[in-house]
Length: 247
Length: 188
Image 1 (spheres, rainbow over the protein chains, first blue to last red):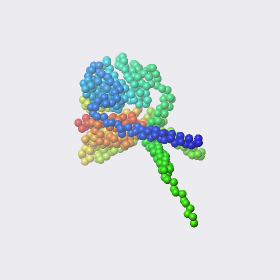
Image 2 (spheres, chains in turn green, brown):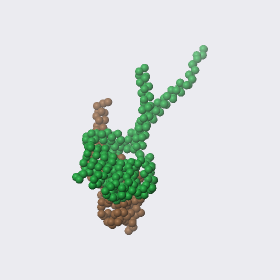
Image 3 (cartoon, each protein chain N blue to C red):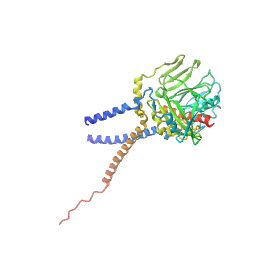
Image 4 (cartoon, rainbow over the protein chains, first blue to last red):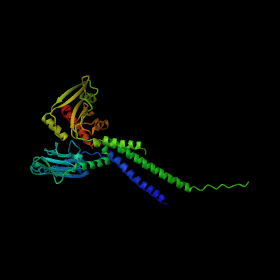
């Protein structure tokens, strides 16, 4: 009886788990190939069809507004009536903070969460990367920035605050995670998202996801096929009993 | 499971871990030359029977114009375009570009048709341990036919390679630079 119940439980849990595996496998393939779903940007569309993350108005020219989104960095020169894309040498994504320098007309800073900080001295036409004491694509992400005395920056990051001083950057209010713990966590992330395998990550996770999908679907086919056959055989009328003809 | 089979599985797992790019990553210099300049020029302008270097120095106004189009400052003062001719007729140009990757520059060549379209991009020297997959056709073929008016931005018209994200940004930015330089200094 106990074995029968366990088999029953195993079967139904397997069916539910199979559904979850299907969802996980299909979404894993989708994540590997996000470009299949990415909407192509339309020229002049502006920032408000996206997820706006930051904005700044030039204190010296109030009609000049910069807006940063999850997927683009935009400028308006007419108080927000029309918008243009700002050209940068890196993908303008996850624009976490924008700050005009109130003491220096034309100077503006922008922080991209996972890329770094860029500075322009001509209202945003030409940008230069600001040298930081850490490398944002490797895990310490930028959350905000502020301009202090003498145009020095203070950065809010996922590893605490960094303040620019006369002798360089100082970490305050927190320190980067200890390298060992950070490496272990990074290894977990890398194994989970497939980056562990470098450029082979996408074909490996695609192949594993494909194999899981085939396994689950073939399992369902076997299970439901057996169920249907069993039900059909129950409905079939019993074969007539053979009668002995007396000699 | 036999002992031999267990040993084989354990060895395979260890080999996978040891050869994983995630563990192999270090910022140390690791130069890998895939193409010399002569080989690269043959890839970028294959039909040319003669290749002539054409150094060009942008004027201050041209420099400003290029920087505005690129959204960044130019590092070099002079650019050496290589003009490929066949029977005296120009059939293409090539520019060798150095673009900073994660830590070190990636050197690559951009072959450009006389009308300003990308003909070929090929990585010549890669200097980091991880990310050299950007030299594969699967990534570089995306640039074929692009012009300076295309965005040439990762996640816009270029798809980056997983595990080589920063190198993908660098190549895209370098190709854009080559095309804008060509447009401003050669095609005019």
